[in-house]
Length: 146
Image 1 (tube, rainbow, N blue to C red):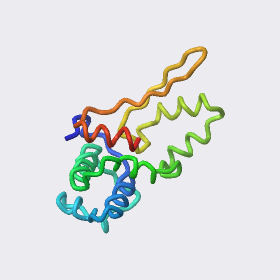
Image 2 (cartoon, one colour):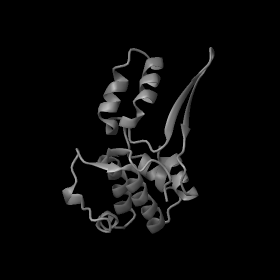
Image 3 (tube, one colour):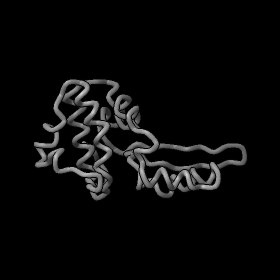
Image 4 (cartoon, rainbow, N blue to C red):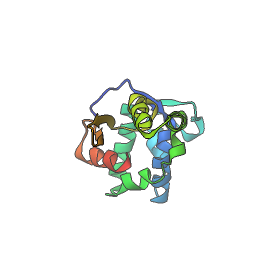
């Protein structure tokens, strides 16, 4: 189970790559939702979901599929355009440094589960992703997906 801010909400669209991977591996993504009183038919691009609920769905999918590279499979389906407004915000930055700063500042608009921080030195820039507190299997999925 995910241990973090239960109040953070993000687009339901972040589940689409997971559902595609679930289907590709022969399972029914609708079953993951039905237990929570949700349905694919009722979802639209404007819907949001609490991050803790999304991670509970991810955790159940991990258990159901028992695929050690599920995070890689899901992450490979997330493209730059999957980030919508966040991607446009990054692309509008005048240079790479500004794109990184804007990316870190507005990461709540992204589909990331991890937390991104920037560290600058005169000779380098380091971008770090910090994983949330979660079970080891969920942390592995997040690291692979994000």
